[in-house]
Image (cartoon, rainbow, N blue to C red; front, side):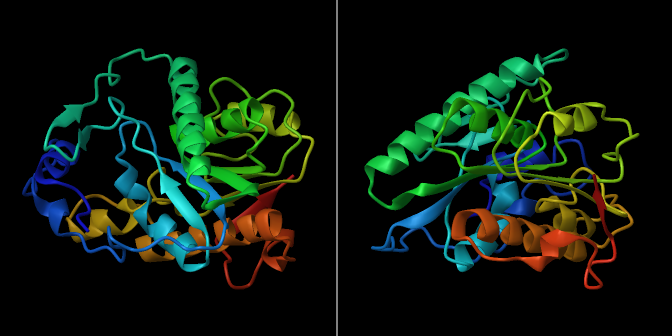
Length: 275
């Protein structure tokens, strides 16, 4: 299975002094022809950051799939820097213009997520009582608003995304995972304002040494390409993200007791809980 096509890789790397095809050689642990399970599985819809291809969620999606989840990463065409279709045609990011309305983008993404969910439910593969939406950046913002718009979505998670608009009352389980910018008195005021409106189960954690892209594949790809990287090692950042995301989903889609979500852990000293 190809991680990114040549055209997609070139679009992602266009502003960096590295060979444009570098990301085409990225290895994945998935294959196109894998047969679907006959059992109805809990579903995790995934939405990437604004301009990010869905491929950047691969490290998280593969981990969740290995744990028995059905995972669907959505490519938001014309928002991703490049999307190559089966016929070879590649679209670009028409939405990448200065002053783009984040609330409008979120509305479009919610429509995308609900459409994909409709299509998957027709296939008979999904346990309708166990559906979550997880996203990075704009995708995380969209996860919250998808929960508000669609009663079929039972839980959601935001990986370092600003809420646009601030989330009104939300009584479903929600996980917020952020870089040090996302602390109660940090630069993003939409987090504490949205947090105050969440009346259901909720957790807000930050990861020391992380930056905005530490929660997706770029965490490990940047150092390999010689690009600037944050203080926290990329593999470590993804290990933390996978652990907390899986614990959250296992709690709310499988009814398991996950002590990792109860507070600080010796295994992950980088993680801080906020109230």
